Amino acid sequence: MSDGKLIGTVVDEIAFDVERGKIWEFARATFTTDPVHTDADAARAAGFDDLPATPTHVVVVGHWRDQRAFVDRLGLALERVVVGSVRWQYLRPLRAGDSLRAVRRVVGDERRDGKRGGSMRVVTLETEYVDATGAPVVRQRDVLIERGKSA
Amino acid sequence: MSHPVRARQPIRAAVGDTHPAREIGPLTQTDIVRFAGAGGDFNPLHHDPEFVRSSGFPGVISMGQLQAGMLAGWLSDWLGVEHLREFEVRFVAPVFLGDVLRLSGEIVAVDGPGPASAAAPVTESVAEIALSVRRGDDTVVRASAKAVVASS
Image (tube, rainbow over all chains, first blue to last red; front, side):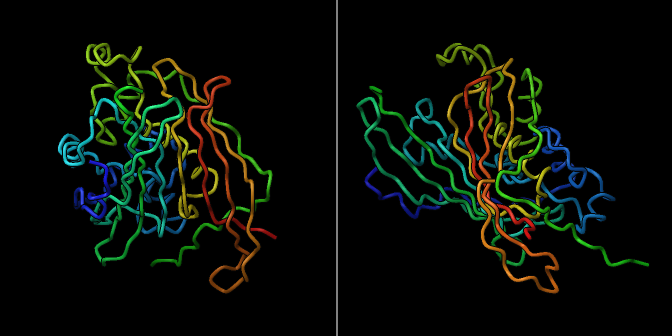
């Protein structure tokens, strides 16, 4: 299933809130030290009205996703899939109290020749995170690579 | 009584500028489990040695998003999270328990300055940053970013 028919497919759509405790947890887990993520006074002094989230915070949406259903839907063999690259574009910083909706779509699906023969499938997903006013705040693009069986 | 709060200004930066590298590790199972709990990635490849044995990997591997989050955090600690415009990571090699990682980066380009205004009293430009996560001599993550900086 890599003839491009999946392009445009909405993989999943998830609503979640940006929360103080999760910002703190994520900052600690990623060794991020700027106190604006953990200290309300430091955040206010820097001009934020609540704790700002760290740059890759939106990946916490993984808590609500069903990864098994998603790879099945795309017809991918999980054991042969690796993430090649991820890109985030920031339209504004996220902060505690934001309510987001994440819509993930297939934007690319193609076969490419592998470097050592065989072919691989490259699936590109784009997730748009939209705030409560409907404005996009973050865009994320994931490139997934499914190695060929023989590679 | 509330006082108007002055937002942080972008830092002054030029091509060639760097920030002290951050060393993390040796990476422990606890580091990985803490990130699993924070981010919600419960793939057993990252915490279950029995499952890992059946998968063919030589040992538990870290999630790419842990390295991505560490590097993005190092970058935002330097330039300010509100000034980031783009961050892109390429995963070059897997990371294992016990690995010592070194995060670093450098400003490789600065766009021509935009006009100063009342809203932006310093002259703001967009900088491009090249970053990496290394394990000894090996690069495990390559990354690039764009951020607003002040330039003269």
